[in-house]
Figure 1 (tube, rainbow over the protein chains, first blue to last red):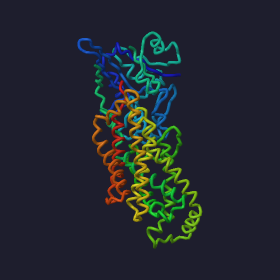
Figure 2 (figure 1 turned 90 degrees about the horizontal axis):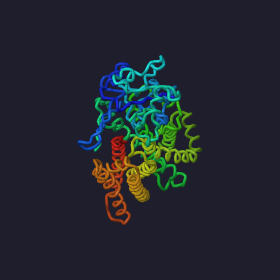
Figure 3 (figure 1 turned 30 degrees about the vertical axis):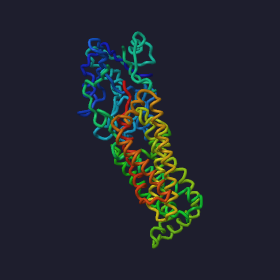
Figure 4 (figure 1 turned 135 degrees about the vertical axis):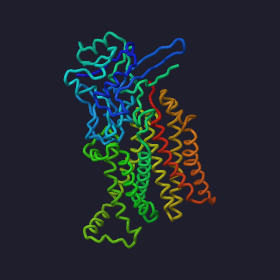
Length: 177
Length: 313
């Protein structure tokens, strides 16, 4: 089992519904977010290209945050989901510093918080909150090891990229281009 | 032209617009750790070489300051933790891949060691010192017999501690400025140099002062070499590391780094030490004070600038 997410940059309109859904579902404290939307404008007027990306933790296969964590609070859960055990986290900031995507933050209660791919929802067979609310249906979530899963199928059909693969993290968010 | 903005307004505290999770506590700790490592290294080394009587400050006096230094460093580390009550979790795991875990355990080893060493020499600082309890006197006598082993352990652990202060940062590939293996040796050299400077400052013995000024001069030379090497490496590396180097070569940290760290913290003290060796009269306190302030500033700048440097995507 290897969970992954594919996000269609051609369909995403940057509405930030995914961000609000995540904040609501996961009780993210006010002023913080576990996912966010990046808008990229490339080129010189009038030849401009626009890309929207809904970003979050990449649930890397070679996760620097898990490696750097001195207590083992950051760990890889089933399906390759990178998680934090609150009561093992000392809030040293090593994982926050080690993430090239800046996907982690310190919860006001002191421990480090991040995207969990809505682990509690997928256990019940539901989709992550962000995926389930997307009005353009630009996000695909599923098991990469299952060739018939939605995410495997779309990655077979479409061209995609990952973010900073040169950082050696082997990220598991795929952006369809 | 390429412009990327976070349109959903992410503004995570300590993360945006750039990382600021490590403030003054970490550089203070790195400085105190390096300084303590430097002093313990020389104390152990000069004891092993049988120079205790010739150079009493380094072997007997200076190490007495190390336990409070390490305690203060640890206290700063504790202050840095955001989930403080869980700090003990550090000592429930040994994680070989995590430099911070290494550091926590090395400190666990070297702090009691430095206390033992200080206890063996406290009588030189307070001649009327009395251990009062029989068991304490027996423990002291036992340690006195094992002193050579203590010295060897101190030399070994202090090198690990000194190099660790650099490796702690260099292990983060997400921060291009830190992600160079030169940082370990550079922080070790700088730690040894601040240690030598502290000994010069404390010593009342002219021969000892001269000897350590000479050692410090050598270490400053190595440090300058490593700094130049580091920037050469960055300039020849990937775009993110070129950008990281540019923070110091025209960017926002240029003036403060080259004027205060390299100029006032390394070159001027080196010149003063050479002048002293040539028997030109200069107040001996100036060079070591500059080295210590330079070392502290170096750690502040590296910690801060590293968090500004980042990958672009």
